[in-house]
Structure formats: structure tokens, C-alpha cells
Image 1: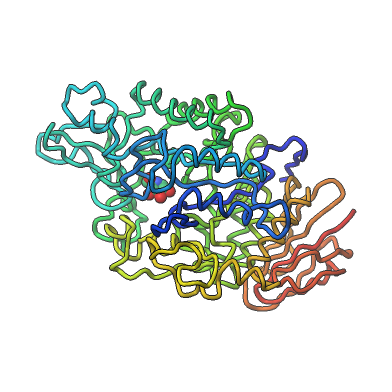
Image 2: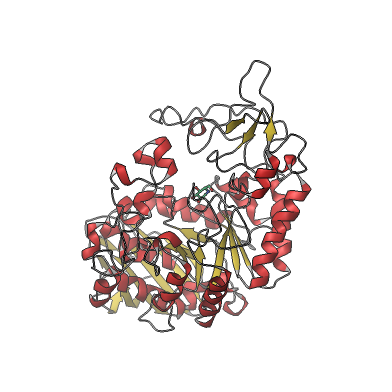
Length: 544
Ligand code: NOJ
């Protein structure tokens, strides 16, 4: 299972740690209650000022900031080559790039090729008439002779994935909202226009792209009906058609691999840029997105740990399966939080959130950290009157993603230092104590734990490039593994329970405890008798 790399050969996206910024919620500098690009510039030093007082991340992925009617908060793009005035303009974006690069921070943008906004001029043209030159840029179909929809596909946001257009008397297809019509990637002119958009940003100097729902780009040519999913949760809301089907024909079609190779070929013309894809499929299907010879995505996002029960065995098994399945050219990565999920600290509890921090930052592969998780921010129950997420509006409050998208908590002032105005989503009262200013002054806070872990990772080749080896240490409540590079090993032991636990690492001997998630001790330890407190993770360094 050992896979080794030479640190000097690693790319920036392998060595570094990525930080996801949801721009609406990071920092507002205009006082309108919505975050913007200036706000990101203002906080770059927080992210990395080259000292251990900053977080120490190496790349930011910024969720969409394109002109958009914001039906899905930017994932409905009305122009791929500009910035929405709400977020700034191209000059500010260029300044953001320069300022980020000055601090050694790479910039990854969100690329949303699967669908546009219904306000995009391409769709406006396409819906004008059946003979529009852009008609085939989108997916239009007649109703069936019996009057029914073209097929049975559903939207992940609830309801059917087809909307009737009265003017041209055909349905158009949209996986997501009806305001997000799906582009037809079988149409060469669509490819060419979308590749132009990529060139536009790569020429400006962006370092990478995160490709939204890339597996959905190609649909079955005959748009065959999907079969029902026999394992579907019986408690799904009645309109969740998508959740009740097996997605055999609407996504993950073989032809999408060819488009990914084209993305990759395009990116490679610009040097060391990186393509990350949003891919949710099971392991064997997911792995294909690296390409057959590494000519696909640099990294399909690995959300697998987010879907596991938070237990030592389940997490270990998920990592081991991945490590075993990856071909040698494929670089692993791990994600524990995103703008589409409930907050990490709410899913697993605040105490385990510290263990999760250590896990994320010690596994082999690139970690992606969601803004605010470094503070242990929790989901905030948004009152129904303030719900903004279209998914929540359509599938019920329990499916709203708002609770994990609330503004970043910078200080304990009324709007958490995020804005001078009422923010677009309410701020949780937890911000009084859970904020950057306050946690920075507490030596053992979760924020300081993240900082310590990040900076330790940066200075420790074993964690950046070392091999991964799981260890049976005689206790199922803990997950123990070794990372090794040259003559240095790091033994990582994570206690997933609220009980103390004793471990015996078979190789025995003595090591140096360099970091505990409690941030309260260091020093020599015996590997044959490691004592972990409840909810504790430790890193023990060995020189062999
Ligand atoms: C995936 C994005 O992560 C999500 O936020 C968005 O709603 C859908 N794609 C539709 O673009």
C-alpha cells in the first residue's frame, strides 16, 4: 500500500492546503450585507502572511462570483467572463490575484459548465425560436405523444427536470432550477464557447478550476428513463424524484471522459494549473475521473469521508480503500466540509471537530478546508422567514444549505465583523465566543490547533509526501496510521470516542509527541503504551 513521492517533484496543488471561500459570506467591505472580492483581499493576511500567526493555507477556491441573477447564488451564470457588480469587477479580481500570489496563495475559481442562467444571452437566444442558431446549445424536446414529459428524470432540487416553454412549445432540460437550463455539450459550438471562457481566466492568471457537477455534462443520447432506486430513503420528500432514481442515464456517461481530457489538455497549455472536479460517484466510477493515464482531472474531489459514520473503523476503511484503489499517478485528496453540506462541527460534534482537523491535515493527499471550519463554526438554524437556499424552499427546511453558509465570524461585534449592515443570512449568536479575534487569543482554541497543524504539515515532508500505512494498535475506538518519508515517521493516533484509550503500536520504541489536539503537551512517549484522552488526537514523531 506504500506510495512514495519526492517532495521536490510535487506540484503546488499536492503540497498545499486548499481553503474554500463562499464569497457571499466571507467579508463585506461595501456595507450591503453580502461579501465581496475586496473582502477576500482584506483577509488574505489572515489566510497566509507567511507566519504561523496566520492560518497557512496555500490556495483559495472561490465559489462563483460571475454576473448572475443569484437564483442559486452564483451557480446560475449569466456571463462567464466577468464579475458580478455585487462582488466587484475584473480590476478587483486582478488585484486579488496579484495580492494572493504575493503571499504565495494560489487562486482556484469555480467553473460552471453544466448549466447557465436562464438570463444568459445564449439561452435567451436559444429560447427565441426553434430555428434559433443557438437552439441546439441547450436540450430541447417535444412532449411525448401522450402529453407526458420527455422522460422521468428529476431535479436534485425537487420536481421534474423539464420545464415547458410556451413560446416555442417544447420542454428544456435542467438538472437544477428551471432558471439553470442545461448546456448541450454534444454541440461543438458549446464546447468552443466554454473553452474560450476557460482561456479567458487562465490568461488572467488563475491557477486552477473547480468544475461544478462535471459528471453531468453528458446525458444518454436517447434520454432513456432512469430506473427506480430500490435503496432510496423511504422518507424522502414527495417531490424528490431525483433521490428515488438510479442515475444510469443522466450522468457519469462514458463520453464525459473525453471532455475532461479536453479540459486537461487546455489547462496544460498554461503550465502548472490544476483541475478539480465535483464528483460524487462510488469508488470505481470516481477513480475514472483521474483519466486512464492521469490525463483527466488532477483531483476529483473526494467527499467520501463526509458520508461515513464518524467512527474509527469506518473512516479507516474509507481511507484504506482509496489508498488501495488509486493508481500510482493519482494523487489523493480529502474534503470534510463544503457549502453544500451541514457544518462539520454540527455533524460530528465540537469535540470531534478537533480530531477531524488532525485527520484532514495528516492524511496523504491534498486537504480542502471549508471557511469557518477552522473556528468550529456550527450550523445555525435559520428562521423560515430568512431561508434563502432554493433547495430548502423546494425540498423543505431540513434540506436547506443556508445553515452551513452563514457569514464568517471575525469578531464579537453585532455582525461578527463581517459587515456593517444586516448580513444576507443571519449570524449565529455563537459568534460572541466563536470568532477569529477571540479564538486567536486562546492558546488552545481550535483555530490555533488548525494553525499549528497547518504549519507543522508544511515543515514535515512525512506529512506532505510520505507513505501512508494503517496500524492495528489494539483498540477499535482509535484510528492509527503512519506517514513516513526518508528516516522520519509520524504516527497519527485519533480517538473517535469520549472514552480514554490505551494503544500499543506494534513496532514499540520511543517517540516524541509533537502535537496533541488538546495543545497542552509535548515530549517523549512510549509507542507500546500510548494513552489517549477522550476525543484526543496526537502526532508522534520518530527518527529511524
Ligand atoms: C453544485 C454546487 O456545489 C451547488 O452549490 C449548486 O447548487 C449545484 N452544483 C448547481 O450548480
